[in-house]
Length: 226
Length: 228
Figure 1 (cartoon, one colour):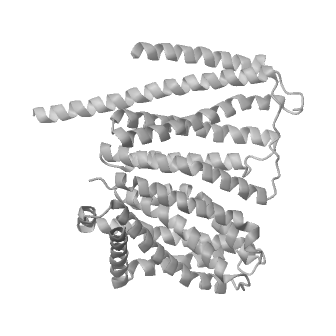
Figure 2 (tube, chains in turn red, orange):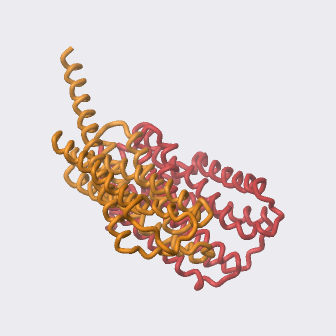
Figure 3 (cartoon, chains in turn brown, green):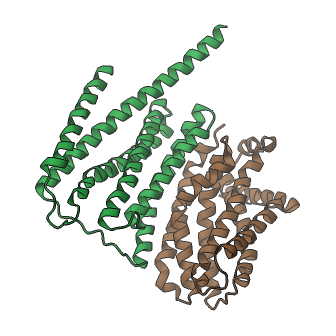
């Protein structure tokens, strides 16, 4: 078990180190998230009162779209120089590769969200009065579900001809519950409601997180067969 | 096998004829539907197609698991055929739904849990077919499709629950009033369900034959190549 988690950490460390050397993906994700805000402010009147109601949706669309960019890269970068074969030859459980990638993606996506969220709030001139702790819990839980299934499907897509195009098409239908839950929770928090009134959505997301950690964990061996 | 297919084809044809007769002549029009009562008849096709669509995706799920366990080409071919037929049936559901909805509810589409889940289901299995198209080698295609077939099917109940709760928060404009089916109507529904099931099986056989023919063609090409 110790060996397993130390290999997971090694992969997370490797991915983050490679990313922070160039910051190529992080900057692209961040710029894309900002662009989503700008595009949405043109699409909807940013001064209108109704914007407060759709702001949670805009925020999550931004998060998911920019997240897809990072997910796409996480296994495609391993295809260069056939690094994936090196990973597969490593004497560790294949699941360690999966969890390593999930946590590396989770850290990167959360970083982007942490920078983008204040910008969203400022640009739409929104003052948040709810609990920050619950907002962080909601964002982390939703992002985890998105990243857990996203990493798995990215591994699948990276092995096909049309990987970048394929990932959004196969990922978005599967994450529908996370999208609904994340938006409903954020909407409630933004409206100043207490978390207990929307607890059911947190439960949906937690169930989703568990199911889509366990199932990919069981199936990951089948994806990475040489 | 050829003979069986012909017999099945003939049986399907007869049962579909019987179903059409029953739907339009035998089954009574419910008394509580006043304007355009004929529109209600689409229910027999709509509901049957929906049930067989779900059945087809369940077959994909089971075959995917069996394929990953024993790696026999046969199961992959069944899963692929069932997914294709399932997408066709689900498309029928999504197309007949608005036709009826416009007449009964006066809207083409409403984000009702069942409608929305069916739409997401359609997207998931279209994604499944796209995965099959974009994997290069046969073995890889089968493996990836099986993995996605399992993921997709497990997702469906969560999607349904999520959408149901989502819709209960928002106002439901149209209560899906369950039209009480009289015994005659119920019999008609079951006959058309039977007809659609036979049609599903017939499509499956045809589709499997295409897969087999493709496999044979690939083998022939390979033999030819090694010959020269």
